[in-house]
Image 1 (tube, each protein chain N blue to C red):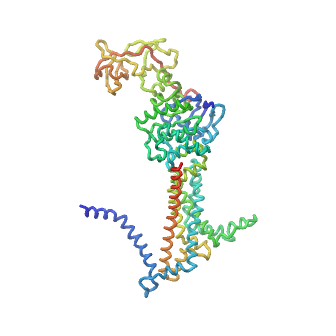
Image 2 (tube, one colour):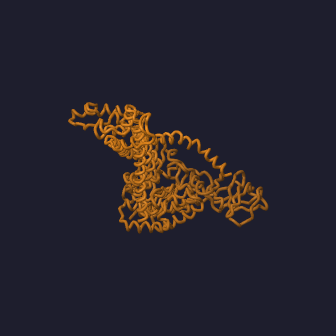
Image 3 (tube, rainbow over the protein chains, first blue to last red):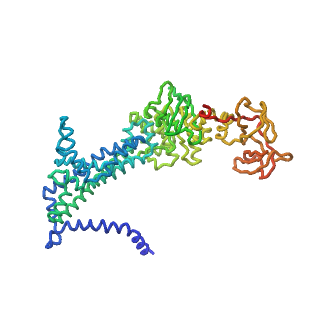
Length: 287
Length: 351
């Protein structure tokens, strides 16, 4: 009886888990394995060379730091705008309709188009500077600048709608009575946002943060178009190393490193969120 | 402090419907008033307007000599209890109760004392550290009650607070609510569609229909001497009988003649007789009617009696007599005085 049941369970799991193994697990394993292989046909079986190159070359280490910066900065900026926007959409029907149609516009614009929009607007001699220069305002360098501001703006512009969609959805799920109760108890709208809406929408906020962070970490088009010539994010290095230099083991090593960083950042994020709610629980127990 | 609440010519217009059509209502300080009516009668809209959650279209709300209809809900100092409990799900019971005090910048030690006292009052002292989801519905509503009274509100507002609870729990919480309100003496407005709840709790019942007040009075007055057929039929069971009225007397369809309590009432729609006010006995000789159907409910027995072409409901108390069989001819004894009912005319029909 028991072995039969085990087989049944495995068979039932096969469509889901099997799919993941074949199309996600195996390529990932291949990437990791190949990052420890040599270059070319006469390559040795196992070598740490790609990793040593990656972790000792300043250009690549700067690239890694820049990749993380280009992921964290747009995530933070998008969150800063998407959070109040989502909260405002809860206020009443009119604001829901108004902000609701407004934030959808960037949803339908592909990333590369967004990047070109930013280029046309913010590049030196672009529309923004042509409008502002007669007024005596000089814009700082926003395109191909060393902080990647143009890339951050384009990436945020693209990500704010997605974040708003997710966060406003989880805020809309909060009972209207709960918000009304908070008001009758004396809470202002800002207090309600901080003490009721944000904690209750936290799972949605987390999901939005993760999606934005991961997609920005690996983004190629936006930094390639709007970013500086130095440093280059790892995604751009991966392209160059692979397609122009044919150094695939290094590309695999960079891919693995980016994934490790992503996991690391996410674990840190969870730890922070966890300690926040824990300290709340401790406050509760201590009160 | 005087906490008399006055509502003057209050209207509320939603897109195409007038939810409130000019409500005038005064609730004296310390009074427990229930707003009673079918769903859609505007009672909840009225309560939410008083709380400040809904903005009335026109009209005024006064608390003693202070006009409050333009005040935001957070500045009114009214406690509100919701049908859905509306507890903060991510906060412990004591944090929920403490919330209103924190908003008022009460000192921490005082918050602790007052929260503990409020939880003790609703009998949940030992559950202070729990989260709302770890409590039963009845306990959650007690927390909501503690949260509303701990801020010492000028007015307590209840929006069908017992409707989500099962029958037994509803009864016990109803008694506790009554006791607590008597003890605190807080002016209270309580919305319900349940007439027995309204009668059990209220000093005064305000019956509403289609955005208007039909009539108001003490539970006994409204039950015994309703002016309108709507009130009579909404508050408990009643038989409305067409009868021959001449002067201050009327002849019931099966021949009995009785005095009328309120012969001056105009535009009457019929005679109201509560089912429990009619005596019913097996007829030995001439019969007034026949038992069509009976229903034994333990504490009482309900009969459907057909008498001179009219169907009557008659209720007898527990062990007074044997259950009368279906088809049994019966003698009916109406009460010594009868009550005339008026048809309720909405404002629009009168205009």
